Image (cartoon, rainbow, N blue to C red; front, top):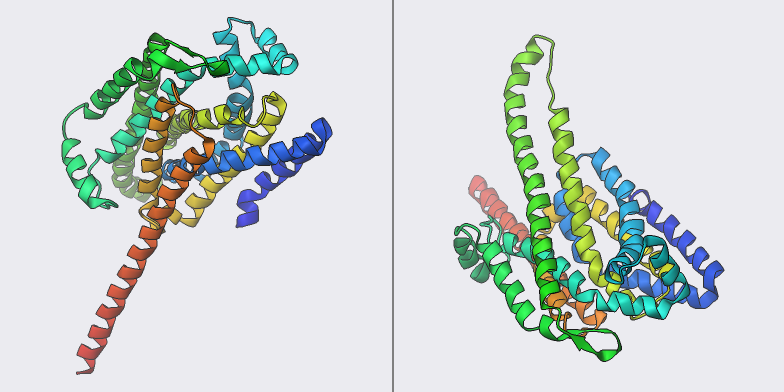
Length: 379
């Protein structure tokens, strides 16, 4: 099971490390290895959240997520995205931006740093909406019941999460963005940029998330209707299926996963510049890490881990909320990647431990109930 799920990750790791040695020797090997670990540590919560969505998709779309999706993740977000940032911020053509990334790495890093407020606002708002929609939803299983119960009641207010997100964006634009961090330790007023980017992130979430949710609901309705009709149709020898609608629903969920992965990758891409400004090594290291994150996502789905450890999803969403706020704070202040990664690991670790304790308590309760039954029947 492990080899089947992580086989491609192992292969990509071997090829990536060999390519690093050929490109820059053993120093490059070490940089790529560090970047891979950085990406995995920063994106473990991404894997947990992705698994919650991916488990609703069939094996075909899981394979698409692990093949075509990884090409988008590696080449799109870890290689093309940093170049696009430079092209837009410096008003350069794509070819000029690539040439700059390869020939003048210091200037390239400066331009990416200057574009960070826009990146942080877009990614921060997208992730913040994911967190807010989660905590305001009334769920049967609650991890921090003392907090989640009152929030679920507040969640009955229409558009509350959007209002809160906009308020946080406005506060960020009026505080952090007015003194945004730039390369060389300088600061600049980026309030307008942060507002526009944050609104763009909010709109992106509402469009992609709304479409995926709409088609998911339609799929559930269609499945219920099909189930009733198939009982009659099978007797006539003409069973019916809902393949077309399932494909459409899966496609939008896949699209949602890709945008979600893109938002998670922002901190990894920016954090990578603290280690290297070589775009080739960056793509190799972050690409290897992204592959493990995706393999871990599929593993969690196939093992049913989220069903066994019911609080993991809660911990991951709290980590998302923390990451969203950290991204907004980094518009003005630099926060070490170790802190960002540890916050996610601690929250997910705590939710995992709570899940284990819950499972033990349930098992003990069932055991006591069984003992009572045996004694009663013996009497």
